[in-house]
Image 1 (cartoon, one colour):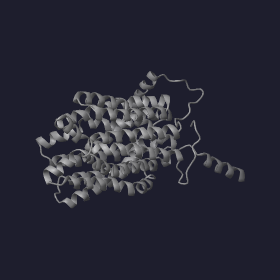
Image 2 (image 1 turned 30 degrees about the vertical axis):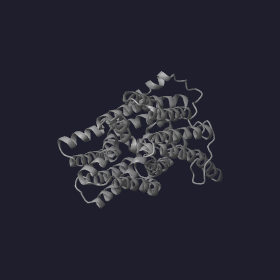
Image 3 (image 1 turned 90 degrees about the vertical axis):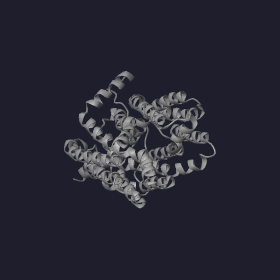
Image 4 (image 1 turned 135 degrees about the vertical axis):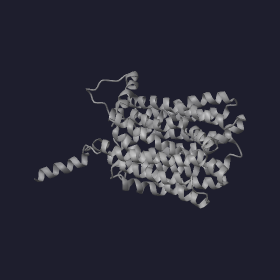
Length: 423
């Protein structure tokens, strides 16, 4: 690496803890605004959920393009610079959204923000993989999830206290979160991109972008992402379809649904680190298959239950699956990637979230209106079962690649040298 990284008492680099704190600040701003975003669009522009869906599709399409470009640029120019660009644009874009009075102008800002504002996503994930040795990456991604879920716990509460006073304040706070994070990255976090070997030729940006072909030729990685996309289709229903389902079909109060989501976030905050630590020593695909099993039970239950306390039980079960599967999935994606293509691999990993976001909510709506609301949850159970079996089968395909011997650390080399000297 270009800068020496000092380690904390827990064995994680101090730079990683700064990155984790910065992520908390950034996401706190986002969670202050996000729960009220759809309501704002409907109130501000006097439109319905169709227009809201179009907006999210535009943003998702932009994030796909932005993630692809950002990942390539992170491999070419470094993680830090691209992260700073993404955060700065996100901050400015939030202010512009709050000032927009025309729906189509709002769409244009969303397209720009979705593209440029997402430059930094793959770069920040690549930073984690750069900073941590492979055996600590699952724990590291788990710590990041704790930070994000702390934001998800407190952000909506803060937003709820402000929303009746002014929507614009929500946009300003979101912008402040991004810009404060950019300041932290600029002042404290060094470049983490592995240094290029002297004999390696420089890549042009075009060649770097064309390098995505090499990622897509990695058919095992693409297969892994394709199966993972099924779990995304399932998981995204929690933050979109579930609230409407519980409110319309079961009369579950909206404040109670907020407590349901808070329970999900608090469980992750309390248990994620320990679960990640426990499962980090097991085969990744088998661990993800186990997490998907809990998805199958938790999400599928909503099609069969009607008692309010059971809604919390189902949320608890699917949250266990989330804590098991998600950090290991990120670690597996980083393990697939060669060092010089890590940004692009993590960008493509982001696509397995962004692509289902283009049509996932719409697909749930079609099932809801043409077959029945409960069938949304029956299908989540079916998709989870298919994904669970596929992940289990992927273990045999990926075992050699994901369990390959890692290069010894400097400490391990020193111990080996001492043993040789003694002998």
